[in-house]
Length: 211
Image 1 (spheres, rainbow, N blue to C red):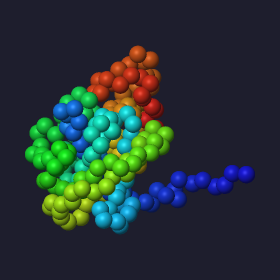
Image 2 (spheres, rainbow, N blue to C red):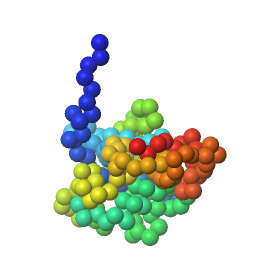
Image 3 (spheres, rainbow, N blue to C red):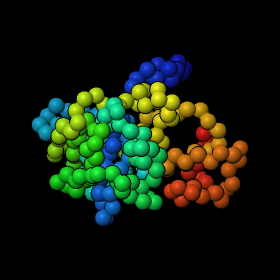
């Protein structure tokens, strides 16, 4: 006998918005995530972050074994979210055009409109369907601008859809087909079987109905 399942039971939950970044094979990668959490109070503390297997940032974290997480400030401009949440790192360096620094492990991070940052080395990982959960042990931590951080609820209240790189997705209902790699929307009632995403070059098999 199956029990009741109503998604509204957890839709009231809110999530922080974070920039997860690293550097591997000479390339800087970063994406917006909503799944960063502290899971131990040990010294050093440990944190988890969950990323989509299809994203370039995930491949880079697997290769480098380190990552930095920067907390977006409540006044973070949409340019940052648009760049790191909607564009693919496979077609260019997202950090170009921003003033970025690097931690001791070489992970890039932004300082403007950022509350704070935590750098971690990967100590464990777990595959969860199309995602990978990374357990990181903190190696650095720094307060940047301070203040309140941007949440997914506050961002969507601006009338914006959830960045496709975010693990927890609350999307505005639309039409067409959405690329699960970079979030590009192909606005049409049908998707050609040989279609290639113009942003990240993903095949048609990576598209899902945007509904």
